[in-house]
Length: 131
Image (cartoon, rainbow, N blue to C red; front, side, top):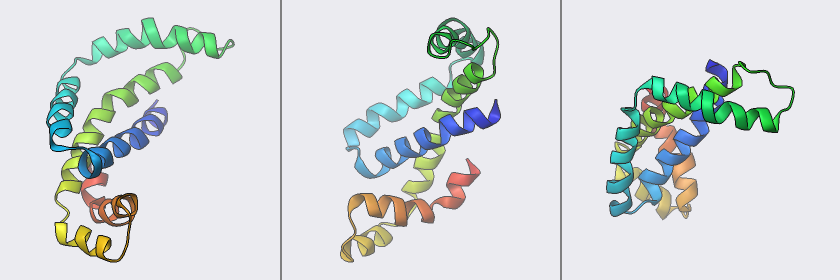
């Protein structure tokens, strides 16, 4: 379940953090960030019920040989649960990267995506890994 959750959560969480930190406007960030915090406060039993009643039937339709209680459905839902934490912690870590580093990369001709993936993300790696 942990491997499935990690496969689901890390790309989505890091992508959302990069979007919030590098691409989103201040208005979008002010709207999305509290929504992520609210999602983090939803009890896990609600997510478990969601997995059992919604995700499992969809997966059973997509994968006919899937039994009733397999670990793919809970793994995906646990991944959804931890996306909020990964996004929030990673975005916080990326926001602490100094603007001078970003400006230097832009001065060397890097695109916004290149700055986010090859400058900001490596500089924030310790905070991202800690999340």
